[in-house]
Image (cartoon, rainbow, N blue to C red):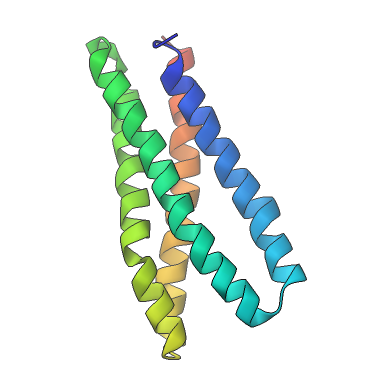
Length: 134
């Protein structure tokens, strides 16, 4: 079971990203007014980043306990962890930029977190592929 857990964790990360990005965020933007949307998304996104960082960290720990031939997957999950932690850490700056009307900074930081999330999605797909090779 422990041997397959990193694959399960990568699958969970992929599912969370797709569910949150493709279903939840668009529905919130469509159904709620701008102020309600801002409050809800500011509540959800930091938890999203931390949840994925936690799952990535758990995967790293399990992979470290396994044989050295899991090093590629370990590096993928470490990258996933770092990107999600950075996204979490810049979230307050994104919110401040929006609150102060600094649209240029908001756009740059928002694109950074969206791009980071896409990279994490790809890293976890690669993690699944690397797991199949074992």
